[in-house]
Image: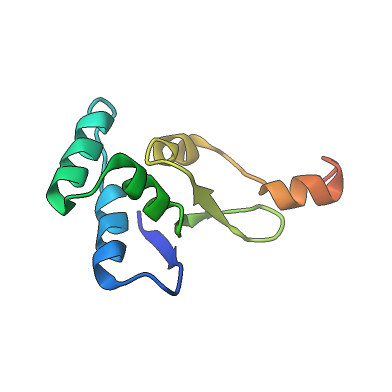
Length: 104
């Protein structure tokens, strides 16, 4: 599994590292501890962490919309196992555009 990162162009390398490290989370049980450790490691508050993460879009490189090919956009690391279980997926844009009438 690989992640595709799309960063806000104004972000520096340290901020990009924070985003990448956030997305390394893989345990289903220790999310809060992961966030706490990340904040302590970089000396930032929770609000700074989450406002920083909002400037970084993350996609799965191997799951794409069945209709348009757009990669699956992630909101939180917990989305990864969910996305992996999908047999097929349509992005929100294609669902809205088609009025839910796409047949794949």
